[in-house]
Image (tube, rainbow over all chains, first blue to last red; front, side):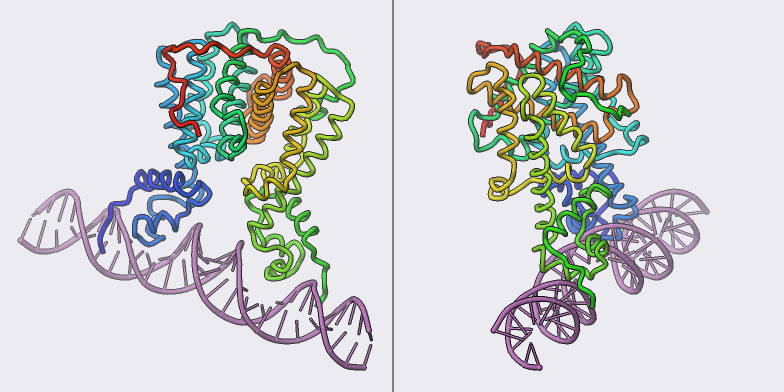
Length: 205
Length: 205
DNA sequence: TGCAGTTACCTAATAGCTTTAGGCAAGTGA
DNA sequence: TCACTTGCCTAAAGCTATTAGGTAACTGCA
């Protein structure tokens, strides 16, 4: 019986690599055991179960992404910072599609609190220091940026923008131009007009 | 032996309901068989395999979503149309989270071509008729709107905006205001400035 | 150096999901 | 009523997940 030196750390890293190679949803305890040439049951000393493994990969991805973001933001402000952080997300998703998918895993409140999720929100807020937005608008803008980054990257990853002109890189740049323009000129709260559009929601939760 | 009258149609509908109840990734041939009180193998006469079932649910969701979009857009233009279509996506995702997740399934090119995907792009383009954008910018804007709608809805569905002020409905409205303002004032192509930001990509694909 | 204790990995077993092959009986049409 | 179609079934094999309990390889201490 040869000991290969399994640890939670190594399993999670290998799981992340596996995710990038075959897709996050193909990451399985069995596949990971095969990769280490070890029996499946052996992994259960290092990882509680399949869900636990996936969660740990998600936490790793969020951490890596936050580290890259912090590095990219250092010394930048305004549109320069906006572009840098946006590219961190996009580049990471392209380099590590499986990890990026993992980062989308829904976490329990406790896990979320212990994750790098907070750093991500802070980084986006930091970008907004370069634009003059007062408090509630700043939160709206954080959410808008998060939506655009995540939405664009995941649609692009899903192949939504391939096979059609203009190419995705160009759109990306123009969207960042657009976001920059919008943040510099964020519209004031509109007066509530009881128009015909059914834009309201009954359930507010 | 009682025949319950399985058909592909009924299976797909029931699968969609199941997805909304327990999550799209919990939709399994076995669970569906249980729901019809029928043995698992019986489903394989109506559905090729698990993947096929999921694809058909995705196609159903895309179709339903496109139908709702078309109904919402009828007779509206400009910001009114923008808001209406945006709310279709958000409301659908809240009412049918499983179906919405299904609509995100990655389709093969052949499946995508046969899907309602094209109608979605057309609807977004239709909205832009109310704004004066020339061709390449129109495509950029279509992609931006797609990204924001999808990004916001999926972050919100993942719980990203709960437990924090201001509430999600308010942000949603302010984001739509912002998009409207941006579309009315879409920035012209910036002159290429070789600045210090590493915003370019080597691989263009 | 040798032994005790820890622990890393194993075998075995149960259970669920997927998929295919082949069978029988419930409907359908002549 | 009889042949035919077909809807649902049994059976079986292969994969993943998970737990219980065993054994051999390390670790540290005398």
